[in-house]
View 1: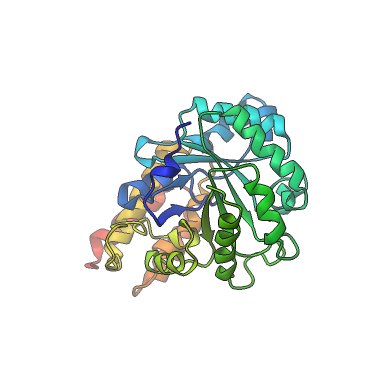
View 2: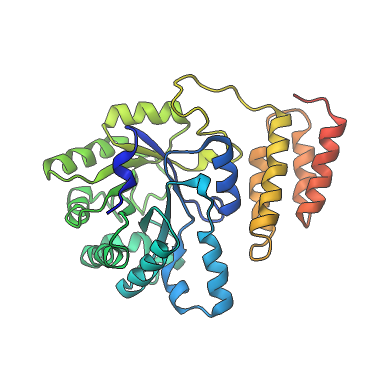
Length: 329
């Protein structure tokens, strides 16, 4: 089996899969400005891919669009049906991905109602069968997982050994329970305990910590404190495709200028048009505007104008005028 995880530096740094955020356009932008050690697609419904009509399937498969510069790239899927996980894992292998990841931590009610995401914490036997199904579907790819400490309470001591028994290549653990959502600080001491459990069981599965990571400096500190193999960074990527730039350089990079922020947003809009505009509503781009356009005088006024736009052409016109009229740097 080709296992890219074994070749990564320690610690390594991964970009978390964020629904309607880390889509094909944003990932390509990030890879061009500062690629992480591992990238994931948005989580995608295996049930949908298997059961949808041709139009629905095409839209879902666009989430699996990737470029060579994103490697290693892992496709993340969710389902509570082993047969669907197996079929879509086989498809993922055919599409040339570097790995398959099963989401076992999403707290969204619409995902949980069919027994997927964080609901799998309550059914460890089914969770284990899903891992086995992914391995059957993609026997030559490493299978990894993303999960939480537990459902209503911290169940790490019982939940993690169940997962480790199936020998996944890696497990990313969000250091909160499903009930806690993101309403309490992530408990990184539990990531340290996850590493201890892994070691006690003499497992070779890699452990990634996730939750409240501010930047790469913070990620390095958390990795050192917990002895985890890698750190997954999520929402701090908003407006900051440079997050992973100079990853092996310990020095902090300087903050991007307003001019750089506008230029990279223009690049993001162009990639959205090229890759996703025929299947994705332009409104998804608006969630990025506040992150990019902030931190300088008159940024709010520009952001308000951008939020009123109805298409990327209009947004590009406004941003072009801003670049031409302001001497910001």
